[in-house]
Each structure stands twice: as C-alpha cells, then as structure tokens.
Image (tube, rainbow, N blue to C red; front, side, top):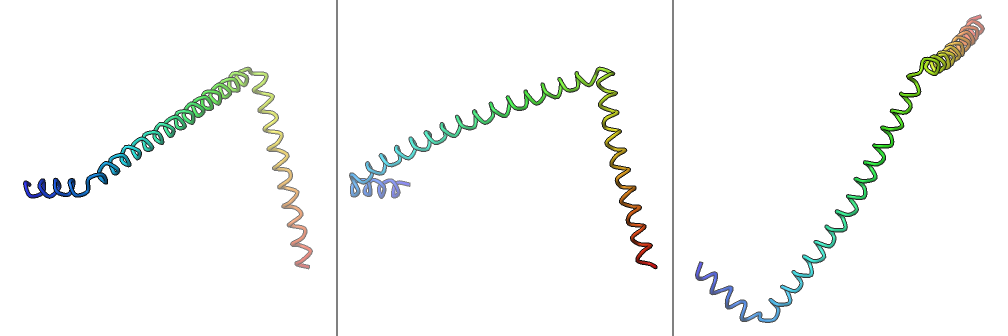
Length: 109
C-alpha cells in the first residue's frame, strides 16, 4: 500500500497541472451529467402528468357513457340498433352464400 501511495505521489508531482485539468474536466462532466438528469426528470414528469390527465379523462368519459346507458330507454335503443346491424350482416352473409351455391351449381353442369 505504501509503495502505491508513493507511486501516486510521484506521479502527481510529475504530472502537476494535468491533474488539475482532469479535475476540472471531471467537474464539467458531473455538471453536464446532473443537468442532463435534471432535464430528463422534468420531461419524464411532464409525460407522467399528461398520461395521468389522459387516464383521468378516459375514465370520466367511460363513466359518463355508462351513466347514459344506464337509462332503460337509451339502453334498449342501443341494443335494438346493435341487433339490427347484426341482422343486416347475417342477411348479407346468407345472400353471399346463396350466390356461391348458385355459382357452384352452374360450374358443375
């Protein structure tokens, strides 16, 4: 350990000013690093704040929609509309299937 300390002491004397320059460079490095971390933390805080607001508003919108649908008249109207769309889609599939059957019969003859 003593040999290492003596070697470091001699190296410090021999290098002189260069150690001071390195110390200043290290200080600059740490200042830049902490400044970057500070900016990054501010940006992350803004992102978190925006995400929180978005989640809060989405939840409120969902609540209002469910509240609106809790009324029987609105709920039944929405259900009838959904069922009508399903019926139209099913009828469309039936027509397409009939057309395929007719086309297959024509090809078979």
